[in-house]
Image (spheres, rainbow, N blue to C red):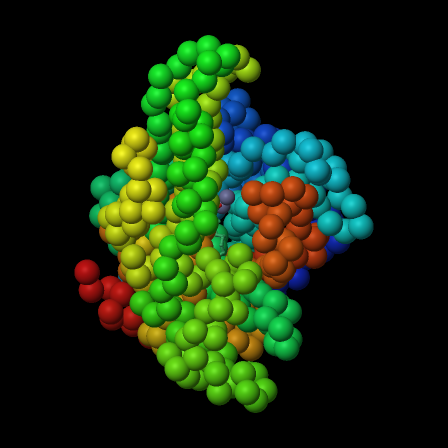
Length: 477
Ligand SMILES: CC/C=C\C/C=C\C/C=C\C/C=C\C/C=C\C/C=C\CCC(=O)O
Ligand SMILES: N[C@@H](Cc1ccccc1)C(=O)O
Ligand SMILES: [Zn+2]
Ligand SMILES: [Zn+2]
């Protein structure tokens, strides 16, 4: 445990207990947030009316946050929000809590309740954004609102950044990062969405593990295009733009990127978990290099664990043709790669060209970035230790915390110039079937899980105020 606790605890710690009325109000506030369809369709297209309405909504439901004298609220890049909470002790380095309130589209097919209804059934709130990531947006402001109502005055300054276009280009977060930089801010750490508490996922392993993401995979959106002559479908050429492109993307899907075992956080995590397993799994996991083929073959079988051991290839957009009797001159497909920490954008692009191996296919990199640096998770890493400590108090049944690489990307990637400590963590249990609901159908959160998320933030903010050992390696920059 890297944090000094005991001696210099704040005298007036506020217990994280909420009244019946507060608990009803907090879940109703979340439902209201879900009902605003803040959809990001692409970097060019989003529901800007809803984005603006969301700004008004948070004013309405968090009146104390927006009217407190030591809190500054700014709207950045038209729709994103930055809250600056001035702490009483300017000698403490500030930190940043982040979330985003835009969501991916949710066509109604397959949903048990309309995706923007925010309906509650059997203690569960359904809707797009209940896990990604309006739960976090609302929990951050809700926890702060409740602390303020209890007259809490933070010692350490912090920021809350709420992005409006995380699901596309993250311009809101980029502007907030630039703004903080222009103000000379350096951050002790950042907490954004990402890792979670995993339970009952690994066979024969019943203990819950808190996975705190200390890095995230890189990403590349690659557009493949084939141009061929168009014409009347009654006299078709031997090959068409559609056929050539379909074969190309099919080769990509059928040829997964190589497994990369090391150079990420995986080996450490496996060794850390080893002793929790009975024989012979404990032996296998404590010698990951020796048993690499066995472990990878096992991990490859599940999409989630597969994503940990390689760069993934996902065919996400395919466009061609306008009429049944017209041979289309152009076919386009977009492939979304999530790049393993052991590879770079350049390497993945080269591999892709070799797999496609057809010079009629043109490649256009639409957007790309390399995997993110690994944040410290040692005893001196303030952000990591605060999360770990808060997990232990809010989820006493969770005894294992492990640093992982997030397979999804977050807005926090724009803040590497402000801190080396970027942590991505949802303080909620996420089962593999919940994971499929993120960007899928029937996304949902239980009322109890949401209340716990609020409680987590409520405690995290207070834990950040307890007297800490100086964390020298984070301060030097
Ligand atoms: C050996 C460890 C065993 C099992 C681990 C299994 C899975 C955990 C892997 C990675 C967990 C990290 C991140 C979850 C991924 C996605 C959510 C993150 C960001 C969401 C971004 C968004 O779409 O808005
Ligand atoms: N966070 C989203 C959107 C995103 C994709 C790729 C890069 C950056 C952001 C995701 O991981 O799917
Ligand atoms: Zn998200
Ligand atoms: Zn998302």
